[in-house]
Amino acid sequence: MTSSPSENAFTLARPKDAPLDPPPLYAELRAEQPVTRVSLWEGRLSPWLVTRWEDARAVLGSPAFSVDFSLPGAPNFMEGAQQGPPGFFQNHDDPVHSVMRRTLTREFMVKRINALRPAIARLTDELLGSLTGREGPADFVEHFALPLPSLVICELLGVPYEDHGFFQQHSKVIVDLTATAGEVRRAQQALSAYLLELVQAKRKTPGDDVITRLAAQADEGVITDQDAADLSAFLLFAGHETTANMIALGTITLLHHPDQIPYLLGEQKQVANAVEELLRHISIVHGGMRRTAVEDVTIGGVTISAGEGVIVPIHVANRDPEFFTAPDDVDLARANARMHLAFGYGVHQCLGQPLARAELQIVLPELFRRLPRLKIAVPMEDIAFKEDTVVYGVRELPVTW
Image 1 (cartoon, one colour):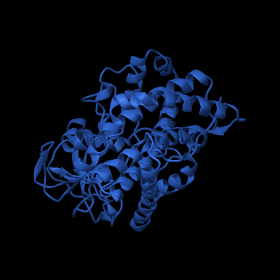
Image 2 (cartoon, rainbow, N blue to C red; image 1 turned 180 degrees about the horizontal axis):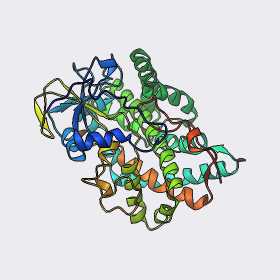
Image 3 (tube, one colour; image 1 turned 120 degrees about the vertical axis):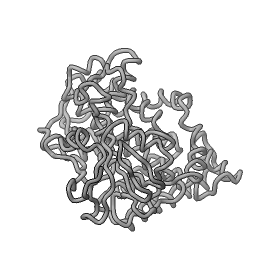
Image 4 (tube, rainbow, N blue to C red; image 1 turned 180 degrees about the vertical axis):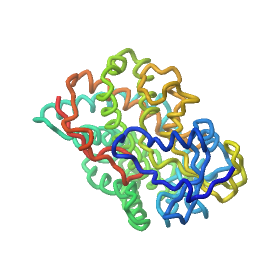
């Protein structure tokens, strides 16, 4: 089975008329050509698009595919994109990936994240108090969805929150699809330089935080100071950009499905399942997870040759009717919701998922308990969704309560 790149060329951007759902074309492809060619960079690259849940998991879990941006044929978001330093390990294969990831594994163990729950609950309470102290409408993103995960990741890392303007500014560049490769690289370097100073400062004034422990690993020769800085920069960027957008999108989804909110306010087991369903139903990764074949491999009956790129739109795979019953419905009690691919799959799945889950499980129920009359203050068509960033979400969200 083969297809010409020009036959199925289409943009991977979101349609403005249904910003929380995959475009209908994806469902058509999943049914008729679940592994098909698409065009990138005005036709200069023609990677494969994989739209079924089973095939998506096969790609993400297979060692036959690389995450290395520097490989010829890699289906990067922008032409000329360069691989980040080892500390930005999400785009590195082994052995770099395993070495760097291992330095952080203990930091994201469920036991350690659970110890953070009281701090997350306290910050949630404080920010909701500050939000409700304002005259509405207020921007939910600016006053709640963005500062909450920023405060949490700062506390975890040991980064002064008063510097949040600096790291949020550079984080926006890193995920901006209109930025040049050079601008992205300079933003990464600026964050790393800032964190390098903190790594060195923690040696003189250690704390109970991730950066202090990374500095200790550098002293032991496990990693370098620069690795410690880059790892911290990656966590600082990823730890607030992703969750902030998921909080906002999750809130919009729940407000459009008010019949589901009572389930979210139930016992902890229900809350946990509700969060999994939201992670399945909506996604902050609309551009797809990107891989390059390093050997010939068959996916969904199609031979993908070594050197060819693959795009896995996880928000499409998570709506596969062959795996999820009535996949376009929001069902917070869904039995197999946790089988979603929101955090990826295999060795490269998101390291920070225990933290993301903890934040969402605390934030969303408390939000609707405290603000039962929460409403979006503008029509859906007036919400500014992020169409030009790697991390999908909303730029602002005016709300009343």
